[in-house]
View 1 (cartoon, helix red, strand yellow):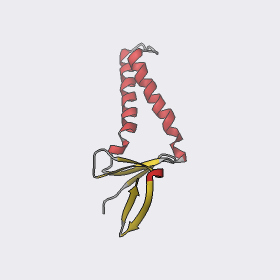
View 2 (spheres, one colour):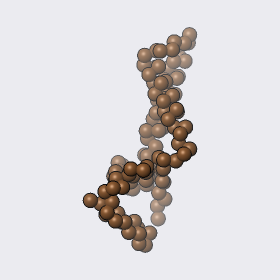
View 3 (cartoon, rainbow, N blue to C red):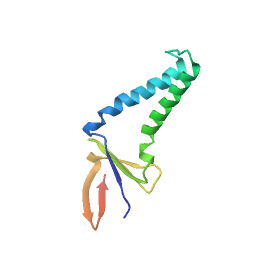
View 4 (spheres, rainbow, N blue to C red):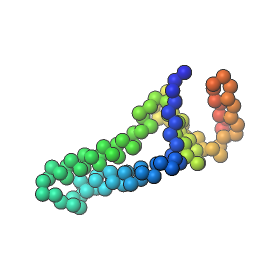
Length: 108
């Protein structure tokens, strides 16, 4: 049986992600528009690359694992043996059944 990675978006420890993502976006914008100028022009380029790495890391998290389930209070994203995934809202689920290590979800 293949391993499935579960990602909870409501986790209390995820509060650190928002400042980190905003820092990455600020570094990208600073590299594009030069809000803060440095004496060495390479410093601005290195900070811009660092911003791209931060944003890239968070936006590609679901592609790191072959089997991935991510959820929050409204719904979930299931990606098993596919490149993209399937979004399912919890209010659309009619019934669920677990038999022989297989989960069957019936939706509207």
